[in-house]
Image (cartoon, rainbow, N blue to C red; front, side):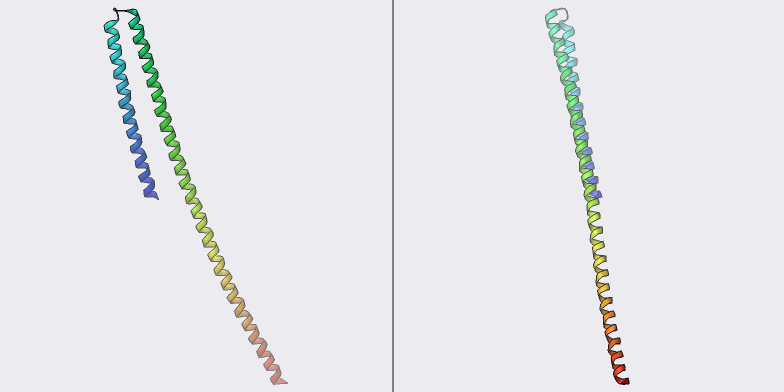
Length: 144
């Protein structure tokens, strides 16, 4: 179970690392796009005020998109962490439940063994009592 947990944790860590790399690649791509758009803005700054306004609007849109994508990535990471914590809690609870079941089975086995020994002791006692009774009766008969 410990090996499985270690293996699961390694898979989760690997997935997180992969997601982080993908997010960084995407973020760098978005940053390059923003930088390219800003460079174009500089080259056409004097050409037309309308074009400049459009480029600024596009930059704001891309920045908004990047912010939303960052929020989405953080939400996915949070969801994944919560799922992992839930899975770990479920495994812990299942382990505790298994231990309780095993302890109950062991208790019942000890109880059964005690009951069997008690029944044997009672049977031995009854046999001894019967033998004493018969001996007493035989002794009485002999004395009579």
